Length: 134
Image 1 (cartoon, one colour):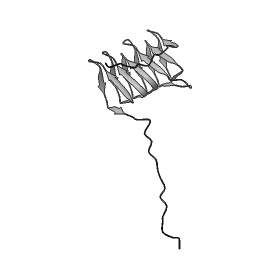
Image 2: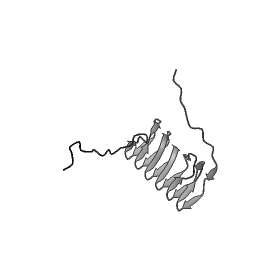
Image 3: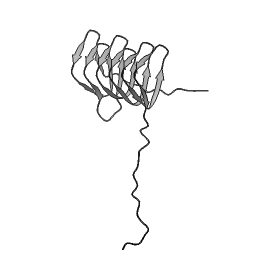
């Protein structure tokens, strides 16, 4: 009756358990974090970027991706252009900006959940006077 459409992601890069990165991370495609990142994470390139944060992972920084699945700890704001999935062991200390969201029982967000609609654009229309010019 109801079907879910999930984004199928290919993981191109891995930050393994026991690894610690201090500095900003830019990636294309898919990135899985099992270790620790202290810095901002941003998906770049012309194809959608997916970030998977495992239950062993910890990220301190701002995240900008198209799709995100969190099952670990994130300290900082999360910007998901398309969707965010917060799994059972997700711990987010920061605001989560999303277009679509799925929150599993047990996930904790200390911050705001903010829906964004990328299709809506505020347009300014210049009105012209119908009165004749003097």
